[in-house]
Amino acid sequence: MTLTMAKQYTIGELISLSAGYLESKGCSSARLDAELLLGHVLGLDRLDLYLNFDKPLSSREVDEYRQYIGRRGQRVPLAYLTGQREFYSLPIHVSPDVLIPRPETEFVVDKTLEVLEAGQPANILELGTGSGAIALALACQDPLFRITAVDVSQEALKVAEANAKRLEVDSQVVFLQSDLFENVTGTYRVICSNPPYIKRDELPRLSPEVQTEPALALDGGPDGLEFYRRILGQAASLLEQPGFVVLEIGWDQGPDVRAIGEKSGFTWLETARDYSGKDRVVVFQWA
Ligand code: GLN
Image (cartoon, rainbow, N blue to C red; front, side, top):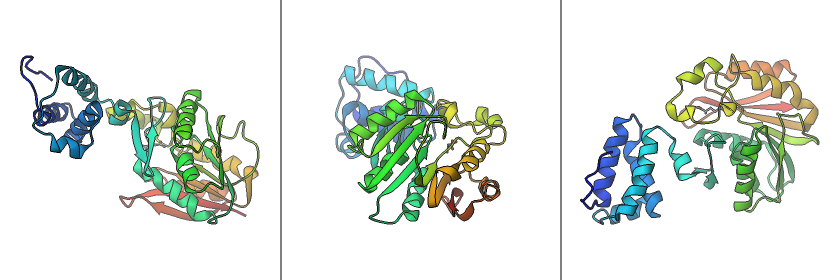
């Protein structure tokens, strides 16, 4: 973005210039991102930005903002720039070591809550916790829930643990480095996961933003179904009776994942749709 050095820019002018720049770089929500990044730099929410539209900014503020806009123009996801994304109304800190929580993943939390009895203690296992979003949303719902949250990535676990401390639910959640069930012991009422489910040869076709996210959290193997086979092939021995498995899936994976679960002896309960009406979460019962 080229700015004239001597000129003092107002909030409104800077947002317009930056939105145009981001649009030219192919960012889909250019104006919103320009606003959110300026809010991040100035410590203001969007309403305050609008109320201060004509306020001139210092050259230090403009410089800092320009760096953020430059990186967003290189298609770094907004959440990695602000370091935060809201999930289940909770502020979840993120870094490039973790997948950015998606709104549709909130259905994994909803469906897990649905199979649990309200007000009863429950042991829950989350596989591939990443930022910890699912585990922490569950922990915040009920102090009686005990959650074991595993990830194969030590770096991801650091992010998740810091989130648990900040949200003050660290006494309810045990974090464990584990390749799926590898180091997991105990039995659980629910095993839930948003596993990697993108077909490997589709990874290079994802948006530049998604390509900055960890491939480890996206790559579901040649047919995208590898983690469903591994999870459903091993889950039964770690489940209480009755026990449940709640899995996020890609929009076209419902029938395949159902078949994998049924082949492993699970009873299919439901394939739930997300906000855009697409298949998103499969729920199974064991015994
Ligand atoms: N929802 C993610 C995407 O659309 C994929 C997440 C995953 O593989 N679990 O890119």
